Length: 212
Image (cartoon, rainbow, N blue to C red):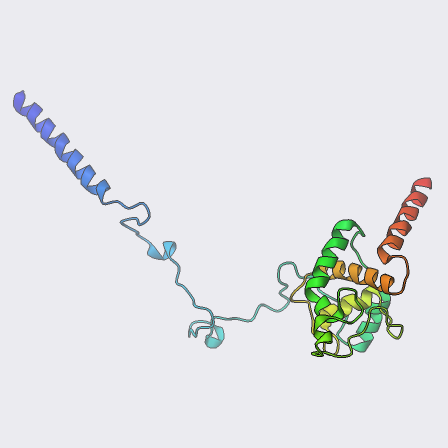
């Protein structure tokens, strides 16, 4: 009976020692055994590197035709004089004219536009004063048909020395900048702010609809 008990104690002790030896070497961050390593660690492909197994032998592939990046909205007006004329005539700001959009528009205008067009939109930005660029028009230029559609279209494609800002700004931001630009145009012309007239018009329309 004593021998049997002794064997049981030895077996238990050996089992405990084996368990301790296994668990003491175990690293939670690095499992000891991985039966399918490819399921854990994928083969890394370095950007712009050459790989025979890939189309054209390179890692940087052209997106599938018709691919649109997240947040990008297609723009139907072409980068031609005809497209600009149509946009100038037809395009309207789809955003609500409120303090949030106007404040954001002012912030973005000062970041992207004021360096050339000036904080007042008078064409007297820092680069113009330093004679880095010349001939930047004022937003109040009587010879230019500056509308909401015209401003947006020029930001999309650029015009003359001005490059496109489609990669730096999204659709909403371009419309917000347009709002502020139209307010600057009103100030330069000594007229009521464009945003104020829009708000008044919206209030009258709302009142009319409620009356009907």
